[in-house]
Length: 154
Image 1 (cartoon, rainbow, N blue to C red):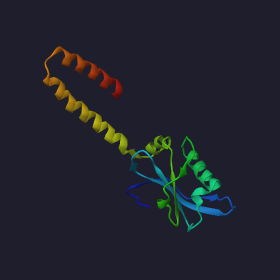
Image 2: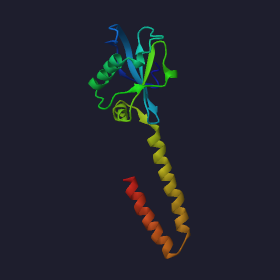
Image 3: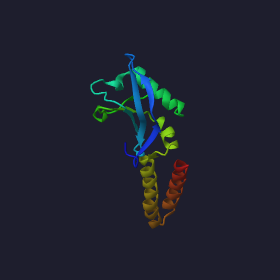
Image 4: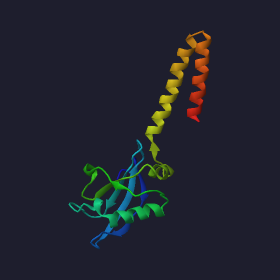
């Protein structure tokens, strides 16, 4: 876990898998920023190599119950990229509804940040294009475009 780029959502707790084996989880965490789809990392106290716990619906259900206890409201998660699984880590892919909860914990959605920059850049660039024409048609078009842009920015 990297304290500079991670947000810890939960500290240690214990779960039981489908086979009835007790598992100690060290933390549930996410990266502090991303592009809309959030991978949720579940860190285990001991090795889980070869056990495919990301498929264990009982265990994942208990992780989700912990997140819901902490304030998450929304659908269940799927497993994350299998390349992210580790000997003491499973990665779960959160649905879009998780973003609100994550943002309340300090997560920043970089997709929204770039989207805002792109729309203001579009507005500035095209405003200059419209001011170059002098006909009444150009003026009417500019007024209509301005109205549409205000509508979509609201």
